[in-house]
Length: 273
Image (cartoon, rainbow, N blue to C red; front, side, top):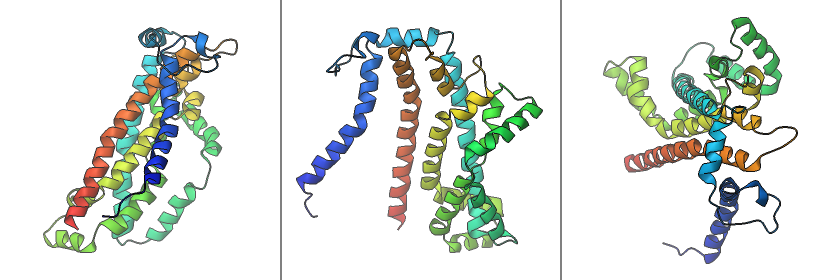
């Protein structure tokens, strides 16, 4: 094997340091008091107020942070499972099944990706009003159960990773179309589905504009709760940084979990190849 240049390691370490420093600084401020916010040079070592700040965070009545964490967890999990299921199912259909209007439907799906999300907020809010879903959790779940990007991504992935011979062999064995999807297509799509699940969970967890439009202070999501920690007169930076730190923990856990799935799927495909 060719030896790697030391410059490569230096570049990688510099990239890791630049990427990790904002998270580290977030942790440092979350463990301090507000006195250090304007200090120069800024402190680089953690303090001893982390648990006190986290306690103040969960006891802040204006934020309802625990409710926000629970609501975001429920919404993110439900949306992620739904998007992965429907995207892999539709992607398999568009990639491997032949039916009338397939290309036209795919063009319509791609066309919806060209419309900015912000343009649909007002009509979507009007629909929520008609359904009586204001300040209810289904208002931030139901509109996002299907993703056009996910369908397109899984269609492209299925086109390359699922051989036609496997599908034909399964049909010869008497499998129905849905059985082929479960036993042949879905395992082959696992690495791509893991990436889609990671992106979907992160985007749903970090969603801010729509929840703040349709929810209220007593039933927020986690990003809505973080917004409530800042007022026009005073900002408790240690409280906000502690909230941001706690809000990052589920994302890190999900990233680690799906990262293992992605690596496992790639290694499995390499062994089969």
